[in-house]
Length: 117
Image (cartoon, rainbow, N blue to C red; front, side):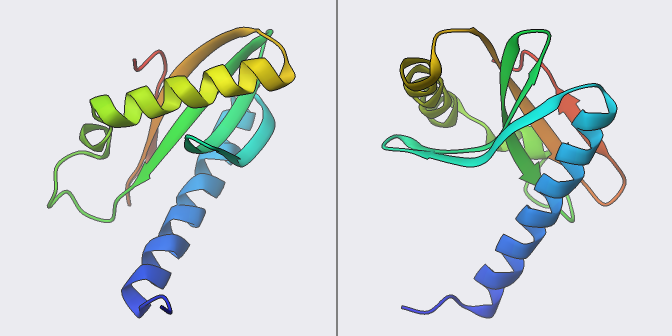
């Protein structure tokens, strides 16, 4: 089934959000490791590294707050998925210090919540 125009715009806005987050994190001294890292458990939006720590970043881009703040969309199930993704990454590339962040992208700013869960 082909993507609808709404799906296309959602994906495009998500990619733009990821681009902004990567640019922001690079300014903070992080090195991009992977984008859209796909595993049997799901996909991690962005993986960065700084000072030997791998950070798995869930990007939430919103153009309005009709459904709440972007960070509110990262519930228990999403957190569990990211833990499984991190475990898979560690098995594949070697165990390292790991943490999780949520990046909120709004029309106004990029806000990264480190050690989010």
